[in-house]
Image (cartoon, rainbow, N blue to C red; front, side, top):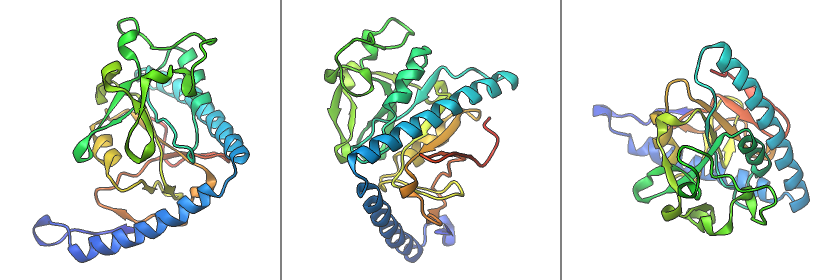
Length: 245
């Protein structure tokens, strides 16, 4: 559902914006309730499936980029899952084992977000901040001291221990969501972090959405500033609405 919020002079029409906001709030409520209705065991199994499909997609993407003469996948901008989101820890471990750098969101005021590598300043220059496989650390195999609790109660890297990654250095972005549809529509928490960040990526960078099928809705309310995500990976399948590169 594409909502035109433009008015005379290019300013958003207040009535259209308000109506879209109300519909988005209803969609968030519905999708959040469905996701949180999953028990811990089911959520963990679904997360494993999402991670598996994501890793399969990564292998396909690497081949496609090589054949197209595009840069290899060296840096992935992913996310640290909240308790009710698809947890990609298993995917992160596999990707890092291939010496792919994984960055995570660090949110600032005014809707600004940057990609950073947790504990990146502890790694070798230009290298990955991976820790040994037998390191007794928590999620994503990063030591607990590399993390803090950020917006919405979501874990994010401690700024003083992290190294920023420029948008132009990112090859693949994995975007979380509250809800999604089969047309590339995505609904976030409403702060606009990703909608501001994604346009800064290289033209050949790939955007992928990760979610549980329970978060799927028939059609997401989309405004002009909302960014559609061409590839969606859920616990059931990988949907690629465009070519991967």
